[in-house]
Length: 212
Image 1: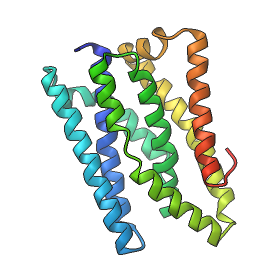
Image 2: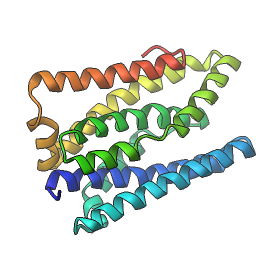
Image 3: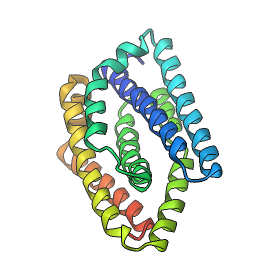
Image 4: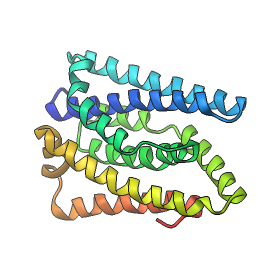
């Protein structure tokens, strides 16, 4: 079903997958071992394949993917520039926590769209390879040097705040997304959505042994 909200959600998701591909490719280039490079290269290839799937779906709806992504280029680029990881560990945290929050948000709001779009979004966001990789390496780093835990916990909390703020800014700049984000849910449901995102974030931090 072609509606402005479908186009906007797919547009922001497509650009998100494209930027994830770029970040994961860079992560592979600075990975400490060949095994890490291989894993991250495979993840990057999967993210680019996701971008292609969303683009093909948009084309099937009669929409130019570049046009659908364009409104989100500047705000998402600004978000990533403002939350630039300083090192390998912060990059892993950004992929695990930041991308995890975004995925939770997209999954939740996609449930207000048609079944075919919801199924595509859910499938695109279902792969856990990068999250599992990040958890393994972050746990190892914290066990090796417990002093990094404070810095990573602070970084994780900052990302939670920034992700919620960015979602509000992006949705507010697009009437269709604003309607999808705010108009399709009542106050109770909106509170429930924020609570779900917060609980999921706390669960991710707990997996690392960090305070949320």
